[in-house]
Length: 265
Length: 262
Image 1 (spheres, rainbow over the protein chains, first blue to last red):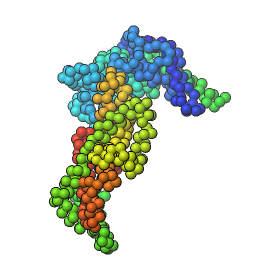
Image 2 (tube, rainbow over the protein chains, first blue to last red):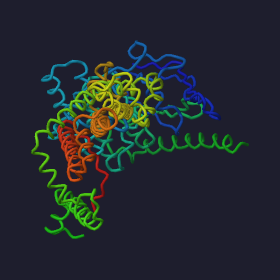
Image 3 (cartoon, rainbow over the protein chains, first blue to last red):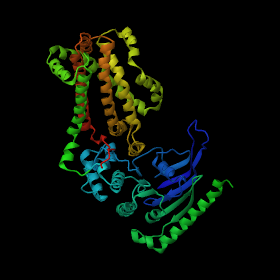
Image 4 (spheres, each protein chain N blue to C red):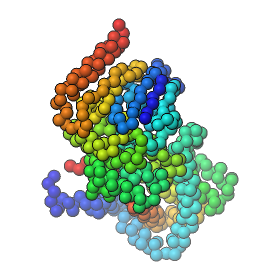
């Protein structure tokens, strides 16, 4: 279980940069995420969704408040909260197999054991046969599968995904969404998934958290009442369309609330 | 252009390498004969002199004497340059402290340092090696530093996220990622080291190849003078080729192609 409690974060401009104000990325954010829950974070740029994700990962520090995962306070990164990166972050000099096994390699797992585990995951994410390939030889979608496999390999309590399909073209993105749903069904990890796409956010999530910017706050939480397992067909269901309309309404109202600030009225 | 066997042969590596050489030698031969100066040998004379010199024991003795400073100086440059460069890339404080000095080393005309070196170390092998070291070190260090600084933050965060300690980070991420830049530094540094090797013998103490160069020049043997230069150039090319070979074998992921393919 993830407990985000009264979390705030302010980014200060580097010394000497005149004219830039400190940015309140997050202001008193509270959120509880249950075990095996799939939560998506959406919102306009600057709403703090990536910052929040990185704080759960332990890559960004918390200014105020506390984040607890399974009762323990987050003080730094850990393979228990494994991350999938938007830009894949694969080692270009290593094979798919070695990349997937990397977390286990760092842990000290013996070579044979970690290669076996990695092979199994490579198969699970649909990359069987590509174990020896280098990242440069793979497409974007395939590289992200490696990233997902790597995160799953360390058997984390939480999977943190930072716009994982953001760098992919539309078709590949849609395919990867379905792949992720399929993989997630195999073992339902707790997931926090940051995205810009409302469709994606609704399709994948149990709950969808909409955040607002300046300062970063939780604006609205939508529970998605679509049954599991999900599929592409759900996109045309009434529930999906209504939820999407509601979220768009919220987003629009957020944007309109922004306008007067920008025009200076 | 349509790709036929002829075009493929004409644009192949060996052929493309030979074309400028042939053009250069041709221009040289014609130009030297036309100008007809006593002191400028033409290409054919130079080539003949080179062959002749290569057969003299004296030439190889000189090569060995000169190259001792290269071995010692460049060896030290690598041993000190890589670690210091890596440290500068990783620890902001160290980089800030060293920055000015590095810039000074890169731009300083070595000729100005010579008197200082003579006063401190005299005229021996140590002094020559120091010159080589000073020529090569900045290149090796600066490239190593750049290599570490350019490692994508993503990769570093990823490894931390999966539990890497500092030692693991170095061994598994920073060093492999910085390796291509380090090798570039070695290559460029080696080129500068060879320059330093010869300059030390011209400006500092006359031994080895430098001595021969001055000897042939002073006794009006233009063919041999140019031939000695050619021999040094040949050594540079051979050493560079060796480094490139090693580079290709040890860091095969180094090459990102920016060349157009049309």
